[in-house]
Amino acid sequence: MMNKRFLITARILALIIGTAGVPLLSIAQWSTPVNISPGAVSAILNESMGSCIGVSGDTVHVVYADRFTLKTGAVYYVQSGDTGLTWSNPVVISTLNGNAFNPAIAVNGSTVHVVWREIDTITQHRTSWYRHSLDGGNTWGTAVVLDTVVADWPAIAVSGNTVYVANDIVTSSSPYNTEIFFLRSPDNGATWGAHQQLTFSTGRSEDEAIAAQGPDVYMSWNDNRTGQMQIFYKHSGDYGVTWGDDVVVIPPFDYGTMVSVNGENVDIPCAGAASGHYQIHLVQSSNSGVTWATDMDLTQDPANTYYYPYMVRDGSDLHMTYVKSGVGAEYLHSGNGGSSWDPPFDMGYSNITPFIAFSRCVLHVIIPDSGRINYLRNPTGNAGPHCAPPAGISQPKSVENQVKVYPNPANRQTMIEISSSGKQEITLLEVFDPEGRIIISSSFGKNNKIILDGKKMVAGLYFYKVFQNEKVLGTGKIVVE
Image 1 (spheres, rainbow, N blue to C red):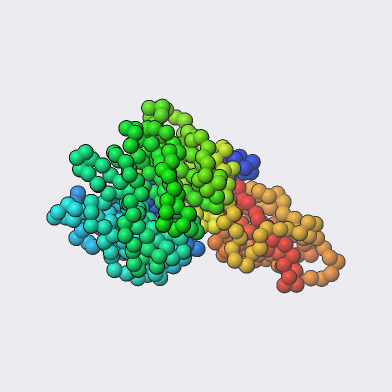
Image 2: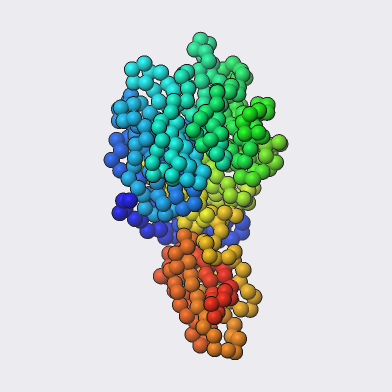
């Protein structure tokens, strides 16, 4: 692992009241950018909404392409095993003398699946390639060619042992026509079925994005079969064996879409240009895509252009990244399922897709910036259901009149007080950071109080646990502003 370790930056801008009506500290918690592509000539991410970041437990997996020249490049893989605090050295997983770019990644437990677009340096023939790791990215199997036709922009998803890949294939050069094809592997990429054509129309059906959850596979894509680009959606409920109808979910003048799934919630963002300038639009379904609400314009800024949105959801917590022309990557958050949104946060220069993921409370973002891939983390940015306390800490449930924490949220200091039982009992306090590390361990004195100095703690979310005679007296959260 590289020795490059960075501290969480406490950039306290202001106390913002979030959409859930509680203090929003997530903006203040973003780290400074870290280059995770050392030695790259010109590193880029996928520009077709195929995610380049995947998370499993505390491990963050990233793929990117390094473009050596206009016609040569390779795909690299890099990982962090400690929620983004330190990073491995990049490893090339495609051939070094090829022309690879637009990689995408899907992760399930210790299996890591990667696809990318390869152009033969002599014939200029375009194909999709696949490679996997069954041990968390430590070793890699043999690279496999998935198609022998002119194929672009592969997307990938995984659910259990079933891996799905979709790409758009040129079916006619004159008149020009592309259709979306799909193939799957039931055994973690060991074998693959035949290509299955999913769209049948004239024009361009392209830039597909897919997501999987249980037996369900969801896909959205750009489509101009009517003469104007629209966002289409379709769904399979049987592991991709059969598919439903093509459905227009966002009307004309749209581009650059992806699909996010969490429970029965399906979210599809895109860049929509109904007003002349591309804005970030979002359409949502709360019943697994059976019905759809009217799409929303999230940016509402016709003076500027927005594109390349990517989002993840954890319950009612929505996290989105996108590019604002002339500014760069921005982060947008909603704590109430998209009904309202907090002010955007500028994350640094980018002219192509920034990607976001979460592991428990931690948010992870990768941004292509001037030929390198920058990584940022927010240790308390996610507050959804997956933001459970670390192992060994139960869900917050302070016992009334036994453990009191005040003020909470804390600024200068906070007091933790326990009620006295009248007996001489040994009572201990432990305070944990979001990664589960003990940062404070102290005994209560005769006054049954412990004062924590907030000025010595990085702003953010902490968990506490109070023991009395080795039994848990109470647990809970402490927020330091």
